[in-house]
Amino acid sequence: MNPRILIVDDEAVAVKNLAYALRKNGYDVTTRESPGGLEALQHQPFDVILTDLRMERVDGMAILKRALETDPDMPVVLITAHGSLDSAVEAMKAGAFHYIAKPFRLDEVRSIVAKALELAQLKRENRRLRFQVSSGLHTDAGLVTQNPAMNHLLMTARQIAATDTTVLVSGESGTGKELLARYIHAHSKRGQGSFIGINCGALQEDLLANELFGHEKGAYTGATGDRAGLIEAANGGTLFLDEIGEMSLAMQVKLLRVVQEREVQRLGAQTATPVDVRLITATHRDLRAEVAAGRFRQDLYFRLDVVGLRLPPLAARREDIPLLAFYFLRKHSLRMGRDVDNIEPDAVSLLLAYPYPGNVRELENLIERGVALARGKTLTVAELPATLAEHGVHAMPEAADNLPTLAQREEDYIRHVLERSDGNRTRAAQILGIDRVSLWRKLKKYGLEAGEES
Figure 1 (cartoon, rainbow, N blue to C red):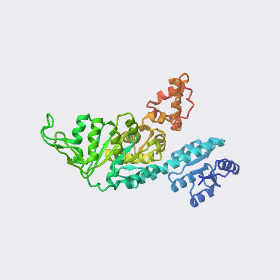
Figure 2 (figure 1 turned 45 degrees about the vertical axis):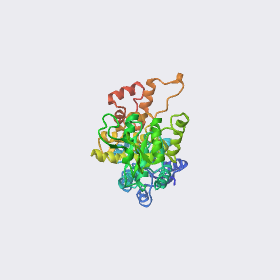
Figure 3 (figure 1 turned 120 degrees about the vertical axis):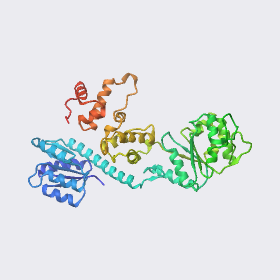
Figure 4 (figure 1 turned 135 degrees about the vertical axis):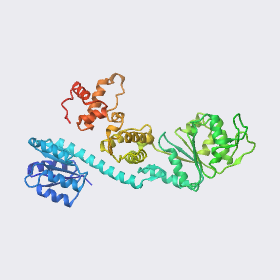
């Protein structure tokens, strides 16, 4: 459905020109004179309202009030003569999205309407996501998604969960490999048993062997008693070996015996102990390439990769970013005892534009930081690292002889932040991490001082 625009004005020529320009952009436009504007709001919903501020019978303030009563997120754009700018500012304080001074340019109107539609969509999406997070409709064993590929992956995981087949989970660091392993465990017949995980790259070979296999008394100096390893501890449940690609070849031989024989032999023991363990492994490496390079045993690889599940990077499931952001917002607000329950649309836009080399883990860190720094109930751009905004500026040219100077980059970034903050210098200074006087000097230096004061 095309966006619906309501134009309220008593000047027939102005209405005709506006309606024509917006219809050319594909909008569904309804026009009314001032009394008819209130009636139109009662009979059908609109996405944006354009209304003249000064009208004889019902003025723009009345239209604004009724619109916000109908929908608090409704963007209302006021059209005003130059002599009424003070009234327009008051209307902005009352909740108007923007104002346009007569005589206006049609391209200016199109741009403002497009921004209003984007803002309204983000606000409504935020409200929907807050409802989903508060009601728990979107989560399962800690996984949060509305991405079709992820939902298909979870469906496959549920299908294989009922079996005892060995699973290899691959994906970049921070994509949630352990969460997926826990998801499989929770949906399996072993769900009431233990889930035990260990990162194979976090320990030296001897320590890893001791952790996994355990030892008998006297197996080495300091072994004063028998100790079961994690493989035995996971008996009847699931053992999760993260970063299996970091395991040494010698350890791989020992693990292969466990997988093949379903038994484990403690260090220093003469006999093996039978174990009933479901094995799930994970890696960020390409194990096929590791096999080809001689760093991973082919026989073990085939034993582990009976069912392979690959988690996509966060950049490939961008529709999940707002949902995850609100999930982490609620999680860390509760943990810290903070009353932060919303994310402003500009902050959501920045989060959506960022590439996330650290994937979901990095997004959670950003939101946790924002909750800790938030000064009110809403997480704003000011609470996010300035490095996020840099990704909205054009990329660096690759040619070494065409690299911009530091001053050029600074000027570009200041322009970008001013645009993102709608010319609000106080807010721009907060984002840049400088005071208003320093910002004023930089604006003067780069010839940007004619920008809007606020």
